[in-house]
Amino acid sequence: MNLHQQLTNLLKEFDTPYTSIEHASTMTCAASAAARGEDKKIGGKTLLLKDKLDFRLFVMSAALNFDSQKARQILKSHKLRFATKEELLKHTGAISGTLPPFGRPLQNFDLYIDPSVLDNDKIAFNAGLLTCSFIMNTQDWYKLVKDHAQLASFTKKG
Image (tube, rainbow, N blue to C red; front, side):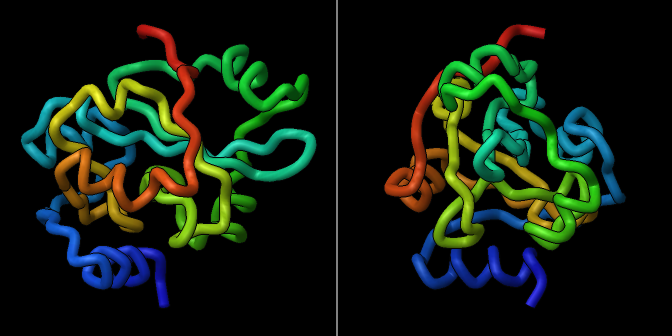
């Protein structure tokens, strides 16, 4: 079962409302926001990173930039890098730009959430595909992920 179907099943299992939008293939957060007709800031940008111990997911507003120094401080690690395209596919089944903002139970990764995500009423993200986005209430999303997530600031204005 692909990541898109796993995500759809998870949302149905927990009776979580969402809107699914089919659109042209999008490779950037800005293009995805335009295809959805939504502000870029509600985009949940998900990054798969590797520190000295393991891979970890970081979710932030797509309107902000990732601050690797802050992330290293959170993880207490001097080593931190982005997953390669091959690692992303191997460990998540996703390609760049399609990783949804979910750790456990969907994906077996520690999840770090920047407070910028919770500043919005909605969160939008590509749902395991470059041609499909889900938009949902941020608090509904947070209820699903919060038990396996850590809230921490790791962004900077771009």
